[in-house]
Image 1 (cartoon, rainbow, N blue to C red):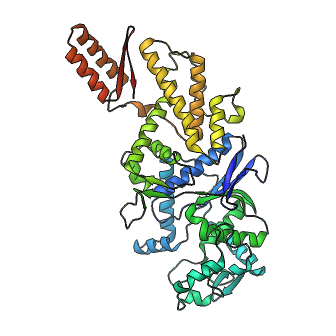
Image 2 (image 1 turned 30 degrees about the vertical axis):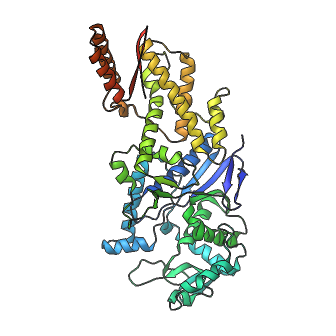
Image 3 (image 1 turned 90 degrees about the vertical axis):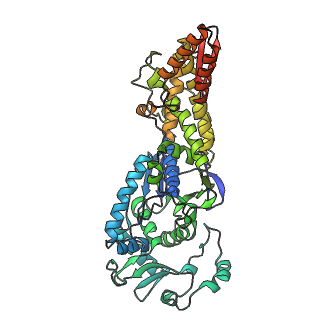
Length: 490
């Protein structure tokens, strides 16, 4: 089973081959830290978190870098409004980022470089571009000469002549920046300092870097000239990632990344998320409303990562119900393991596929799906199958005192579920399982069944039917047989 990925650069699905065998160098364009993270950030961070986990699961050593953009006009504007500083605003929202990601179960990256901490590397890269004829200074600014790079447009598929035809009526020829450029397509590598703005000294005068050069420098400084995976949202393909390629490859003469992967955008009730439409939702607002973080993960993973997803109340409700099913399966060991004679000191932590004992059909089916361009929805079907089977066996054990499947096989199924859930970052806490099905615990359900049995013995069939209907309304189905009454959660 070979892992194949859809490469935005080549527009086709390709077998995954790394620069260095067994190792993956991966970079994700992170957030600009001027506000709290929203649902779009949640999707991207969950997707690339699971991609990293899966690569580790199938045996790769992954070095995962995610940057923070901490120099930006939006950060400066917020600092001005709040009578604060760019550094203070950035620090505050970086702290908030880690709080939000921890709640979503996102593993921390190996490093989080910041633009302000990479200034030497940024200036060195600009200097090299200038020496090679790809950049030119202009009154304290430095611009990239787009037409000097013959491969410009290869990621996005855009052609300069096509863009030129549609741009002429949008150019403000009175704009001082436009007048500095040799060509309208050229973009800033370094911006001269403006009054009151933070600035760094450079060979071109005091100023600050452009957005695109920051990532090129951070990739090169932390991971080298060519990396395996460069990831980000589809909205970054142009101009950000296109410009990264132009900057980096003009200097090194090597591909910046072997595979360019992009996640789809998030809509809210079919519309683009924006503050002006009033549908802008931050991660912490969503979770503070009581939505389970694992349901958010499940919502994200039920869609193919490259396609847009629509955030609706119905979609979150469906994801919440799905998470309850998987959670019951994950808690099977804690609830029934001792009764089945399991050694609970093992089997409750994920095991890499390369270390998994004997062929496992569930693991194989999971990998077969996910190896097809990270098809996590297909992988989830395996988890649901395992969880439902464990739930069924748990109900049989409660009511009949034994299971249909051997304890040894059940332990392997549970361990497999825990392992695969761990790959997807899904984790259930036993404390969270104290109030299932609108407050009805297993003991309360059993007590109502006993009341129903007593009503039937007394031939009070109206009361018996009332209790059955009451349990049915709570999502509990009763099954009467000669051996007694069994029940299961719908």
